[in-house]
Length: 163
Image (cartoon, rainbow, N blue to C red):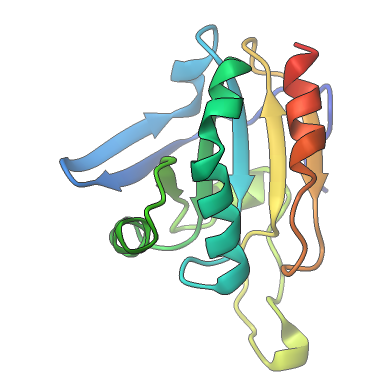
């Protein structure tokens, strides 16, 4: 069952690979400093995920004005994420949930990813968006069943504006 509004956001420590090297990101290190938007996406190098992460990168100033830090999370390796980010000019931090532990903790892992197309990859995260306030409480949660659908980012911004 996915994490819902009002629940404490499960803490995690993940790796982000940047041009200057790997960076360890712990969610709770950001509590008290900024609101947080976690955007889970199924896989790098796919068309919908590329559109989503590029749109977020291009509109990052909207989130910064709302005192929010945005992180993209997928089960891809940090090295694949880095190459994809460079290729597509994705500027938001991409965090590698390579073991799918965070997707499981947030209750958003597919048991079978696209079984109709015979892609039986368990643990892939459903496309999801969570707004977490400075105290670490989830204030907005959207989990999509179809990997082709995008979260309602206007609703995400509205949730941030209310904090």
